[in-house]
Length: 248
Image (cartoon, rainbow, N blue to C red; front, side, top):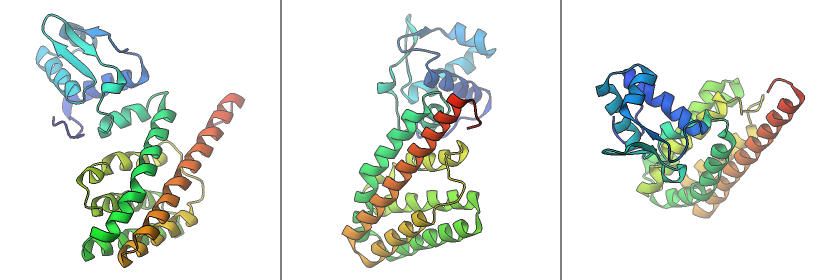
């Protein structure tokens, strides 16, 4: 397992995912100490597998391991919160609203700046690719193709962040993609796909293609603001339904 967000496979990957979800849900609390023997017994794995599990969790900074002390759960503030698997754990937890809002705020801070930079730095082929993804998004929305819509949306924002020429912005693409995919997986997309949002993506692509940085930033800002407001509305609707005992 690399410390790059790749999900580990096999038995140790399953245990990592189980523990991660427990950590994100607060079932395993900061400062709690686990021993390898505890992991072996609780999850029915060998000592070798337990050690690999700890190594992966350490790479994500969710635990620390010290001889004669054991494996200690770290506070969430110390975790690698940009790790896509950590994001998925948090989104699957009862605290998912916090993760959704943090991701939305991150996008609002970064994507307008990325769009402005893309208008200056993006190569012609990248500008064309961004436009192609915006058009694919339009086609998916018209067809009511939710899966295609989510895929095109994720691709558009991944290319936009990379086109900025800022390597640190580009590496936020995975975190952004987790939010976009989560809106679908957590049933946080509206029943009708947002045609206004689609038009804003075309506006960004056109502004980037024409080298108009201020317009690109303004259009990107409107995308992330609208997406944030939409998620807030849907979350409030789910909370209201829960109180009334209605389906989410």
